[in-house]
Length: 529
Image 1 (cartoon, one colour):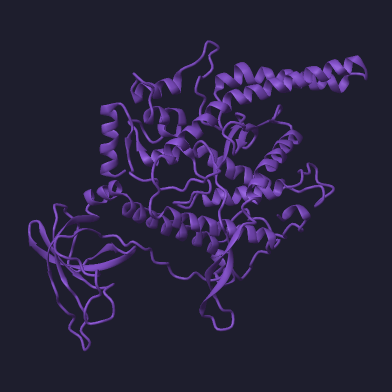
Image 2 (cartoon, rainbow, N blue to C red; image 1 turned 45 degrees about the vertical axis):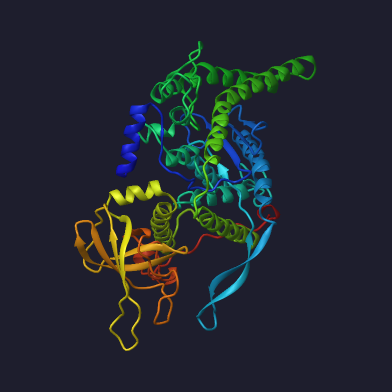
């Protein structure tokens, strides 16, 4: 946690209201996101109880599982979820635009630019909290290897069509959510906590109701009072008035309302199975329908408050202007979505249960690179974030007081102007340490020469001045300019190239004794878009 964030949290405690942690929005928000509020049963990971899902704020689709231990009912739930999610995803796969991508020529081995298709936009799936992201990942893992009756007629529990396809998409969204800066599968609590600092812990910020209570408390109440009410207030029946933002349920709800309702459903279903045809069967069918309706109403009562709070959070976030680099990060999400669409259309098998050593190393390196890029871009986009980097000595800002033209000592002298900057910051500078400023959206580097006085430092500009003997216009700071330099690079460099999986040593899964790859499931009509 940076010093500026700590100060903002202390200020939130003093004022009783969350303080801005950013002046711009650092994450992309779709014009038509798909909001998914899941609910699970206690004691069994991945057993869905129900969900609210949809793109219409005022008309969500309610899904419920009256008996979560029944596999058939679970698969019915997953099939209904696929009927909502897959058409939403398919709507983004047809509209494409031409884009260029660097690829290796198999004949020459050189990097060349090729024209490929890029989806013009990508879907966005929003869940209430970080636990919802984990649940989406778990659903994808449990669904993508399911066998359908078409694939295996003797499968003991054949999944309905399109369930494995949805599992592959959810797995991709879950993996993409681990990439810093990605917006394909954001959690609303993480989005809000990134842009506002509350007076509670980061763990307490995962309660969506408490987090919104700090950001927008009711009139006459402080954020702490409103958050406490959101966490603990119960109705006369002992049920939480603001249920947790899923997918877990409250024990009081499980014991007093849900368990009796499921028991009534089980009794009604057993009675219907043993009833004889005629009026008795009609009565038992009516009891079963009433029991199922009761469970659906219970699920709705637990998910609807969270559904409304997710949309309230979207309203708050949309009031913030976009950061300058948000669209660039969203373009990388579009490339990711397009690539997974192409893998499915090409008939590739589902994602493996475990990554090989090279794939895992590539994923880790990519996430580390994206984390560094995200931190740099947020600082460049947001003066409030940059203030935190300045307080930590990773950046400094000041006024240019003097510019002296100098040249390199070489056969072809190049301009190396000396720029004197007056600053009150205390950056961690050493001899010839490089610093960077943004010039036309590109980083311009300078070397630290030394301190002239307590608040005066001298820099030597070393690039982005053109190829002539005289610098191009606007490429050299002028006296009186207000500039901000960073000690961190604005663009992240790629790491070393990793070997192919077949070329790794046996300690990392390569030869000798290489294990045979799992046989891929046969391609069916349900596996393609």
